[in-house]
Length: 371
Image (cartoon, rainbow, N blue to C red; front, side, top):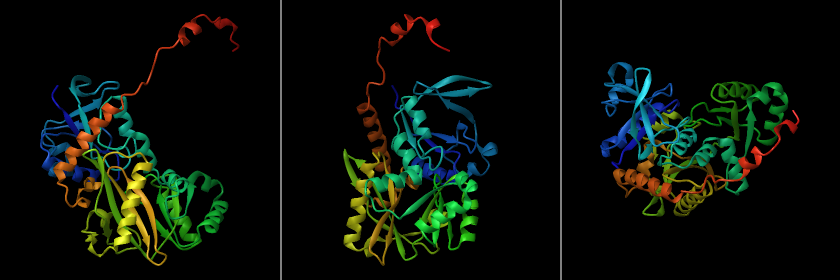
């Protein structure tokens, strides 16, 4: 059968545009991939000119030959919509995921692909879901003794019921200044720093516009931020170079993360610190049972010489290829495809088996069962 590798990107996410950029970078070096664009409303499309970045400013007007597609549950196909019906079926041998954030990096898309028996390039649905939820991720950090900044899990609905109680708990456990983050959002969007009780209330209300689960952390000011990635290459785990992030504001913002040249050369990083970062990158990659390429973000408290794991990105922007100095981008993409295919073959586990349960049930006198 012909190898039909589909590239999925876009989606109902605040990182929608970054996902498009990642996809365009991949299509530039791997022209045999079949792009599938997921609109901001969640509808998937194929078209003749999806590799032209200019069309996404006005997709409805500029995209040519657009057709809606959807997954076929239980089978590795995409169904193509014609009129009001799905009549044509396209075989899918692999899904390369460039979907960042919610509905693409949080396990939902991975779960659909699992149900369709389609191999894919990222960590599985369970790992993605845990890593996407900062509160659950922190729980794993703590349970596995991974150094991380102390935090408080805030549920917005509980906060509305007992505002003063929750505020006192936060102020007692974490103390000011604080940093608040929507628990299931990426790219530094919706983050607020607060130093007073009034600022805390305003920050909670602001974060609740993005998520009802909010992570509250102690805000550390005298810090440096670092990135390091990990990927399976030739059946071995390859840890990338370490790079320091230049951050000119209180928090590492969306603009600094994606719209500026915000990565510094790693030559100035102290040798022992670099070793600690690489070691922790490998450790958390294995703890969370990750696959594909994963970028790990770190916070380093210079005054206390404390290195903290901040978060894991299971589908990082540009697939973090810039962190791998000696690795060609096309080779990285091909690596993700081959590793994902091999993993699918290895994971052909028994998922069901015949039992005598139905035969026993048929013999029961159902009238005797109490209502």
